[in-house]
Figure 1 (cartoon, rainbow, N blue to C red):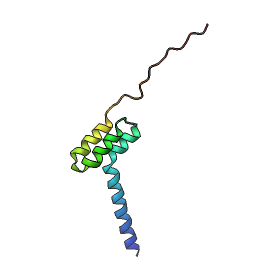
Figure 2 (figure 1 turned 90 degrees about the horizontal axis):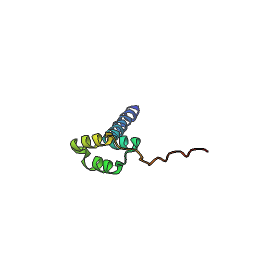
Figure 3 (figure 1 turned 60 degrees about the vertical axis):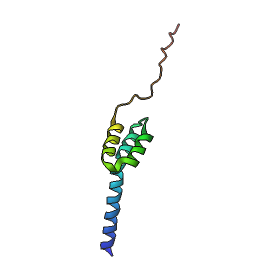
Figure 4 (figure 1 turned 180 degrees about the horizontal axis):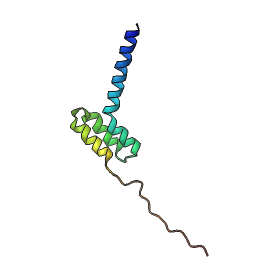
Length: 79
């Protein structure tokens, strides 16, 4: 009984680890606040299994992007 518990726990851990590794580009994009996180997820979901698609997705999720660009207004002088 204890043997089956450990083997099923190990299979669950391997499955979850594989799932996290598979969606690593998506996780990186979400954690970085990447503006293209949805297309990265779609690429990862549909082409991640090809390994080329996974590499493209992870490179894309790690690319530099301009953050929230806002125009700054100079402070008004006090008189």
